Image 1: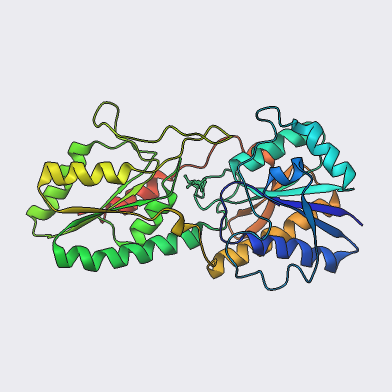
Image 2: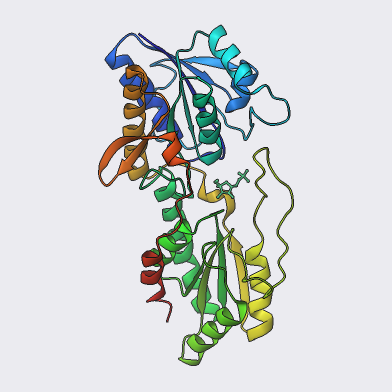
Length: 345
Ligand code: F6P
């Protein structure tokens, strides 16, 4: 019998509730385990704010977006928050045997550090960006890709009607997975991603070539983390940072809108999809993956396999070490981008 603590940290993500439900349901099916849900990520652990999670309190949450626990970007190792000593104190007071943090690189980075300092943790990977190492896919990603694909479909008809260039800015801080998958699915004419700094002259020449060949409109998908090749274009990215030191991105689409229109004379409009990509109900794939992750995390926690992260390898759910998962971000596969490029014509 174990007492399991859960928390959701970082940006929310469709499928978080499915993980919570799966941990509780599979844990109750396996034995007399009990569950405590910390509120607002690491903030709830530091402030000892938590609720019991039961069959009743987790019923009906499978299709719900967001997280019933709330989330935050609080970092227990930043600004004198108390680090592992503060975390350990709450876990002892609440008699929690093992903590299951559900999060991305930051939340799981904290989990790894806690593990090294002797705190029992089992991680569950989450990010719509799909850029976490150690796993082929994270839940939330497919939902985001579907939302972006729907947006591209809608932009196509209005772009065509007005003979416009449509710039669609999507999420993707370090990696262009969302932009590339949705760009392929929606038939984008150019995709700009963080892994490949772009040259605005080349982008503009490409659009001009398309239009010279008789195309009257273009769809440009740009990941928020995409950057111009050094010295080629002035951008105005924000300077505000969170507790993990990440800048708040957004705005590259606006720069592109202005530059494309100015340099080509084609009427251009930007759409910034923003948090629409993270909101709402998860698609079926993400519900299934999140459920499988929750069940696997519960097994690892009950068996004492700490310092691990559940992951998808091919079609199998496996456990990898947090160490391995966090070694480096999972960047875009160049061959996938090459496939997308074939259709830019
Ligand atoms: O990490 C996931 C993510 O959705 C990124 O794609 C994006 O840059 C960031 O979160 C946005 O964070 P916030 O919700 O704090 O604005």
